[in-house]
Length: 154
Image (tube, rainbow, N blue to C red):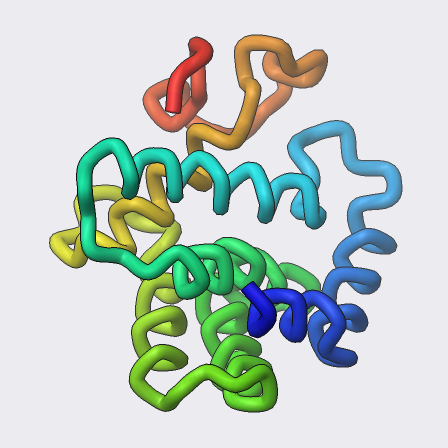
């Protein structure tokens, strides 16, 4: 997981996450912070293990760390997050093929029904990481009910 630790300490990642933190300072809905990224990574990796999928742990964690990192940009965060992945991951020791796979999963992580299993697991884990059934702002949330996590599960 050394390469994921390099993502976490990469100046562009640090700057992105700080900008998101400032934007979300007064946000009452789900935050897009390191805890969310790690929750997404862990839920997804549990699913990968339980279903014996051929997705590398470090690649999945990299995708989870970076999937919302572009939220500050003002454009669709799946696109800006993929662009950040393409810039940060090579600096952290990931190959071009690994970077492309993660960027593709990040680009697709907002759409349900992905045929690519990596993208589908990232989508699922991102949604399951939210505790909608315990959220104080649930009545005001813009998420449609079918996307909300209503129970303890992965």
